[in-house]
Length: 376
Ligand SMILES: NC(=O)c1ccc[n+]([C@@H]2O[C@H](COP(=O)([O-])OP(=O)(O)OC[C@H]3O[C@@H](n4cnc5c(N)ncnc54)[C@H](O)[C@@H]3O)[C@@H](O)[C@H]2O)c1
Image 1 (cartoon, helix red, strand yellow):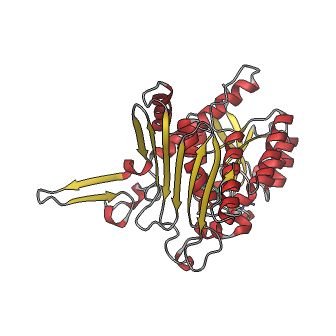
Image 2 (cartoon, rainbow, N blue to C red):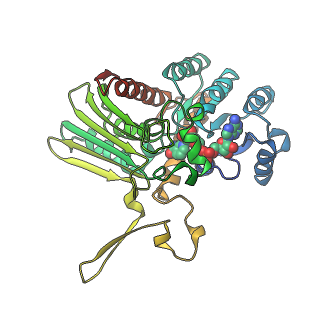
Image 3 (cartoon, rainbow, N blue to C red):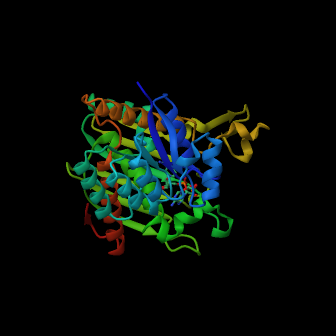
């Protein structure tokens, strides 16, 4: 099969997640980077595009220019990857859909639920695929837990709990990197930092593993840190439609935590639990009874070769495979669709993005009313 051609928004020097998208999309040799607008700064965009050996005519000054010019070509990109900050997601996804180009977009899908629903309507009208990269949903362990549940090993689910704990905003703003700072700017991040950025991963993880549908929730969003205007910590108690009870706690100020996304599911026959961080921890025990947990990628796990740690502490190498799994499924569907064959939507699609926006809006509304119960 010929490789699918894709373009990227974001990914210039110093950016974080775009590199994982790029590697994930090329992992199974199904796609090739063909065009891009890698930064708002054209020189930075050119530098990155040139370093990837792209045709300079396909390195664009803006994503609007990329959508319009690619759509007019005889050999346009098949899909675009949106790996820029949150405020770019809605306008960029909209213009590419309107120009007939399939979309892969990072989370949170949009700032507002109505924007996500509008994107869904355009994608349906134009018959275009839309993937939202809930990375953690594509870990093999998540698929395994889902199968354990559908095989009845857990029995009837009674309780679920997910946490996403990090200390990436535990320090004052002046000590944070640019990639953290925009997450606290409402114009770029949206109406929430913690719930919108990592809370939606926890919510989607529960949904991916259990397929439970939320009914109502009570949420408390907290602004912790003196120079903050958006939440850096939140808890939500959830009532699911078929009676199960759930709890989500996420924090950016949980000192000592790096990327601790974990889940536990309790049924009437058994329970399951899993943590992303465990892959990245070495336990050292001594005869004295002293036990030390070394987290890879921190100053305590120095091996004299810092370049061996390709990802921030707490984000284990499984992250690459999770992205690759999402892209493999999305691109196989797109290849089949292009060939007029039947295809399966077995990757996180736009409905997952919409479900997170419903969760986020209910959390915001509940927290504003002193954690009153709010329909999702
Ligand atoms: N799926 C996941 O696991 C995961 C993990 C981290 C981040 N994210 C999401 O990915 C997105 C990017 O986050 P990040 O941490 O990589 O941010 P970042 O700040 O590290 O990188 C953003 C990049 O986008 C570029 N950019 C900004 N505006 C642009 C525009 N108008 N046109 C072209 N490029 C533009 C910036 O120059 C930069 O290169 C966010 O929406 C975030 O929520 C998802």
